[in-house]
Amino acid sequence: MIKIDPIGYENFSVSHVTDEECGLESVIAISNNDKKSLVEIKFGAFTSKNQQVDITTKHAKAMDKKFRYAGLNYNSGVITINTESYKDKLSAVNTFFEFISNQYKDQIILYTAQKLDYDFEYHLKQNCPQLFNVDYDAYSKAQAKGVFYSLRALQQFLHSSKSIEHKHVVVRGLDNIGSEIAKIVDRNKANLTVCDNNQENVNDLYASAYFGTCTTNEAHKVPSDVYILCDGQDHLDKSVTMETKALNIIGVADSQLASNKAGYNMHTKKITYIPDYVAGAGGVVMIAKQLEDNKKSLEKELDKIFTRTLSLLNHSSKLRKPPFIVAEQQMEEKQKKVKSQ
Image (tube, rainbow, N blue to C red; front, side, top):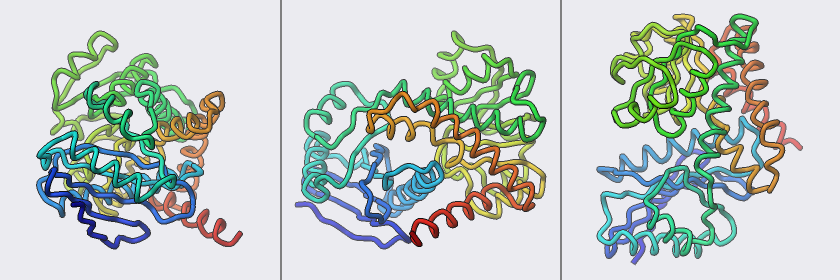
């Protein structure tokens, strides 16, 4: 029998959903709004309820910022399913999606940006009508292109030129998105250094790009013009931000900034940090356009990431505040305007 444990969290509806019989353990976090919700499913291993709730709500908060900053006409949300708790994988997932269908009906659209086992993915699509079929390659390329536009905006702000030729760029994390970013950086004649905890990801990239390597633990200490973060969470903590030798940092994977203190550390050191919800919106923009059956306008929407990033950096410089603080203020102002209409 499914057990639902509601958890209050800021402007989100959060629930811990379990079923002991099949070993289901899931956390649902959806921002409170009247719009239809576009909700990402993440499969992962969690060691405790508190850990799963904490990670899910952090992802949900990051996604909410991403949707609002990109101006997407959807509510956002994140669902995590604990792969460590299964007693029967298919039974647990079927139980969960039956619960979702009954609980939310037509209120949400589900998607996952993770590449899943083929048979498992086929099973999900057959048994969950709310699951949207994401083109993973298109998603990764749109995400990477959005990051590249932020990178070009950063160069325009700093040097009055969009070119990254001969700049040293370090890419941390070579999942599908990180690999696509690395390829774009290499094609645009930057000096590229990459790292990943999975050596196979590094080996796979050799056929497509020319690069140097470092360890993930040392990546932030490598002198670089730009440090691009494609993996992990809370990576930019007090220690990393004090030790980093990067001149500029771009977040891609959700929730890179561990605290405002860490953000101010970078600002004090004159390191420009572009938050993940600014640079990393290309993937969800692509999904939104696909849902609207309007793929032709995707390139135009991705190009707005350049404009938004450059505008943010200019405002940040003018106000003498870190970009992440200015971005938060911009979102609050937009929200106030929407509520007043």
